[in-house]
Image (cartoon, rainbow, N blue to C red; front, side, top):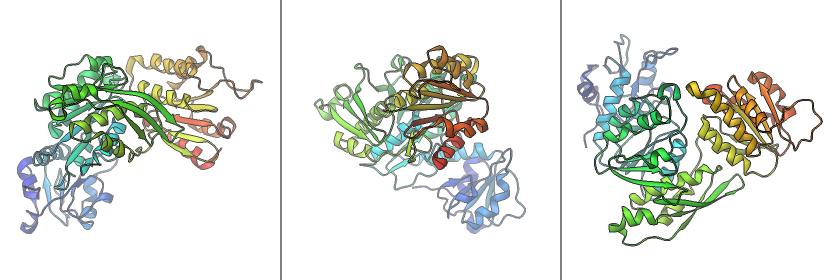
Length: 481
């Protein structure tokens, strides 16, 4: 197999190699943009950021074993070889596309307005029973993270699961040109990035740009509970999953086991009688899954993992066993028993779809349920009403105490009260009754938390990542109120 070298990088990017001849053909293994993550043989990508200039860390990268640096200007004091290009970001995408072309393994792309990271992890867990899997680490799903993921591919990998996140038109096309997925999973079309995408139809159009960069033999794996996806024709073979009986893979009987796991049944008859009948010959029975995770949405996304697994030849027992290895990533429905409360840290990101799912899962927990909610960002002209609808939903699904913080979160608070929630404060009502509290700043909210959170409460913390609600979750985790 061909492999990357500084010389090859200069050739495919049209860049200029600077360095000694002995390093020109050194093998490059993987790429990073953070000099603290450099390992021997890595390509270090120097990005000129708003606050930090990666070029300043080139020699530090060489000290850690970098084989080459990708730069945008000459480095007079460089202690190792580098390739000069007009744009490091554009060059790394060219390099990633080339590197991807060297591998004939199945590549699964994953996107969606909600649940894409969870779906990626579930798919990787299922496939791990049979294959050596490369998956996107954390949420490196953008135009820099995706190429870094692809450049991690090596001869040991048998399948790759790549998360692909976007916020504007054209981004998915640029990602798909690199990834060229054989299978493309879309979890749901939801209210996300509306400032750029306009409405749900715009979100659908942006997400589905990927299909133009797939082979005719590719497979689209779509959430069939989503009406836009159900009615969408990808121009290729498609498999649908979800709770609706019209789907190829039907998820049913989802039941939480406290906050530690969820079980569900999967029927794959539609899939086998359609796409895989020639290979399998008969329809399988319904089979049971248990996933060690919190949240009702997990069961539905397990349908996507099962679809990918079956298409790649896994048996139902292999899929079920593989999903037992699932672990949540970061602040995504991460449940902790602090000794004082059950803390559900789901503050990585938020949009109306994901907040509704989080509130639904919270409502299934026994005891006193508290939701700490913040702004959902980038919702455009619909923002106020979408926030208000979340408040109404929180009241109707039985959230006992609602604590809101942020400019737009005031509309969540208003919606909750309108739907029957009660304003919190110095009242004489019992603690079992619903209460709503609004704070314009996190500082005031955190100061009041010891009085708001009681022993054995189940507490959800959720907002868009830009709200930095991880500070609230951190306080709750350490202080125990």
